[in-house]
Image 1 (cartoon, one colour):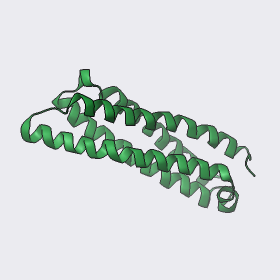
Image 2 (image 1 turned 90 degrees about the horizontal axis):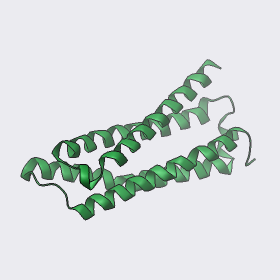
Image 3 (image 1 turned 60 degrees about the vertical axis):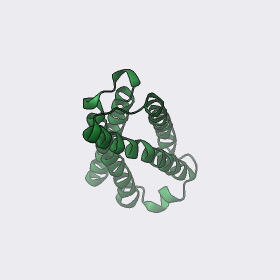
Image 4 (image 1 turned 120 degrees about the vertical axis):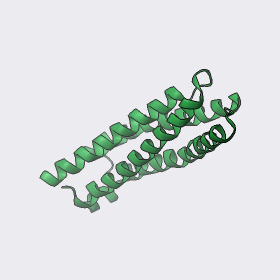
Length: 150
């Protein structure tokens, strides 16, 4: 029981960290606020967001393996697969902003120029898509935890 509680805590903490840092990205990635310091901050915020996402995935998998319900209970439920698919979609979408922030940071450090307005808007749109998909995943989680989908 203690292991289950610790795994749940780590999973929830990682989820909350992801939400905080994707929200921070959405707030910072605005044409009107972008300056050299914000470009640097976006790269750091995104790195923490990525680490939190990895921890969400790892702790979620750990819960399916070592949790009370057992892996066969989780992995045979289609709701887990929906959650995982949405999470993977978010991860794939996040690749573009991550690479973009790295490029922006390099560009600012080398030439001091900020990215074009259109590129900032496109990147922010992808961040917002991620944030909106992330909001749906807990809906499937609560139904999964209550035995729906079996």
